[in-house]
Picture 1 (cartoon, each protein chain N blue to C red):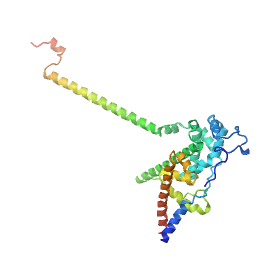
Picture 2 (tube, each protein chain N blue to C red; picture 1 turned 30 degrees about the vertical axis):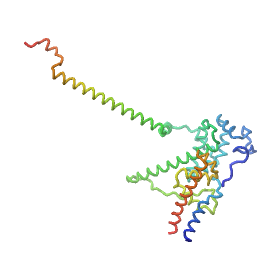
Picture 3 (cartoon, rainbow over the protein chains, first blue to last red; picture 1 turned 180 degrees about the vertical axis):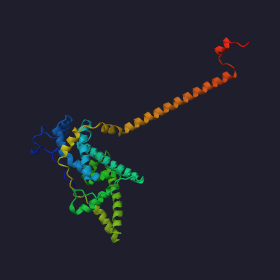
Picture 4 (cartoon, rainbow over the protein chains, first blue to last red; picture 1 turned 135 degrees about the vertical axis):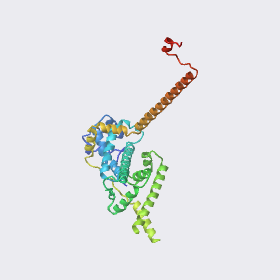
Length: 217
Length: 111
């Protein structure tokens, strides 16, 4: 279970000495967003510094490559800056941020799949192209040492899950969100999230079973 | 079966392997890179690619192509019908000698 981002009221920390130098003195979500809407650079820097690990961790768990995850993270904050006027406060800021992150990460995944398909079609026509290289297993840097190998197997199996199941599983297992929080991010109900997670685990068990049985042979 | 039990245990251990996972840390210079991306102006080609990539653009383009095709087809069928009508009129006029006499015929009547 990952550590919570902050302690204190709302989602942001009480004003601490490390934040001296920022113009604003009261840190609550709406004040920060109002500052950002006015183009306040320090408000934007605070948002980036506070939320970058959450965004990067979520993106990394989906794209499973640090370089791609960094690109996705940058795109997310660019979008936050450019679209903050469109944030209507119908949800929490973190919920909105998760949605943008998941959308950008899944777009990245679809682009990669299209490239693979295109490369495959080109190879059918005998066109010279780079040989398709199987990427090494993904090792999440936050996994405990004794779980590294098993976690790598799990992340590999996750790639075969349908998008919604994969997202729900990552938000629950990697980001530590509750079913309620996941339902808010996915704009769904708690029971739908329960069902998604149940199906995700069932599918993962099937994937892992065939993998481990193959290893035994 | 001991083999199956072993595999099932491995599966469950794998599913629980993310317990205690810590968040991966982003690049400490992320803010600088985001700023650079915000300042960098988009090229014309990039702007065009952004617009062309939107589904609304594709739907609009399709609608224009379909409308143009429909207009060409309708005009074509109207023109074809007008030509056919004119041909029928000529045929009838020819049959009943209803054609308009030429000036030559007025000036040079038959003896």
